[in-house]
Length: 273
Image (cartoon, helix red, strand yellow):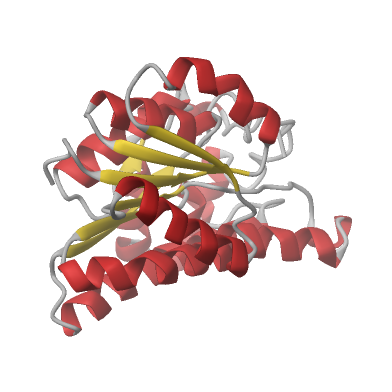
């Protein structure tokens, strides 16, 4: 996709991966609408981003279908249309399944999965009408393997990958091959939501922590939007998990996960929720 002149919505766009993606899109001459629940973060980035190009700011609770529907209409009015949707808004809470009340796990599902369905449904009519557009959904390295203390989050990210692949084929079946779908699968990032989480010594050698949020923003903009990649992993060695799961006997694969320290990697988690 040629990005100049396109229009994008970025959810959770006021910080972390979302903010770095917004910065990259604005540098590519893309009009951007930022949705975020945190009004303070929105206000803090306005002075910087307003100098870049056409950017619009809206407080949005993406778990509210009514808000998503209304703000999509506003985005279409302000930008003309929505060519790109980056579903970046996310929520994580670590801990064993019985450590947290059901409300916490429900919030995890609502933010990471249900909201993503709302946003896709809101922008698809316009994209299908034009037979053009690209939706990028942020999944996770935990979508390719299980992680202790991250069960519900991991479940939502497995679902995001499956949903996105299914929607790619659904769009093709409807004759809308011009609408593209991608997922991005980050491993642990040193700062932000997953600060403190880390693999064992051998695991960290093979799959080192992602150094900053811009690494993922670069994958979104360059690999997904510009090159049309379906599911880039960062670091790229996350792909080894997919390969090994397909090749090795299940017991052997599970043993390797333990050797790499993956099942206990959330024990040191202290990141932002």
